[in-house]
Image 1 (tube, rainbow, N blue to C red):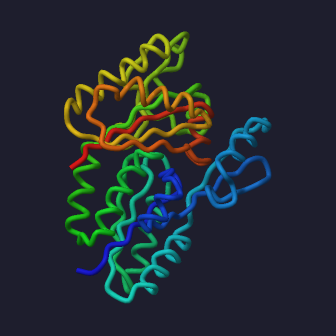
Image 2: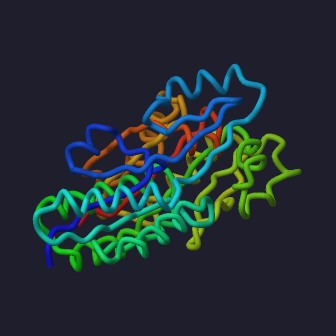
Image 3: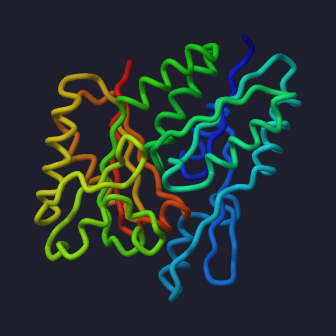
Length: 286
């Protein structure tokens, strides 16, 4: 059935060493700040991004790759492979971006050259990345497309993400607020725990009075869902490493953790959640 190659987009926020180690192809989205436009993770680092938005009066805006950009990537992969190849292209929730649409259109254009399965992760940031890395490991170990897709479908069902934002302003002004819009008017002293619904929209999981109760709510949720099962943990943060480490410590101390990854929320997702946001993703191990 040939090799399996993994493609994702820059919103997966996968650390560069893991991208290289597991041969993952990352297609960048774009970020506009004032009159400047950048490719996420290519000519704009996360550090530079957060510095820029601190000094900018305008909120940043984002845009998805074009179908042609995806087509170029797919054809390059096919041309570089001596043997038959299948591409699994795993992307940001279609409820949050048009990236899926661009990838789907491109997959149709290249069907004469290579088979591409485009997958809506219904997730964002390292909630995508942690799954992509796991499937890339399988592919690198020689798993065929059937095995990769079976594992992918399981992980998409069983991996959960919870996140805290410092303000809902970024989500609201960028139109990604989803079902969390119900929180407006109730945010005095409330620290909402947000998550992503089954269809990939942002929704309020829990309305906590203060950060301590928010962390307790996340801990209770992951303990109830995973108990003593072995898990992998992904922590991502928007220029807030200490908060990310606190989230890891406070919410997963009673879990059977096989591995942890701490990564930064990149410019695209950072444009929508804002500085100081943190998230924890819990993925079952085999």
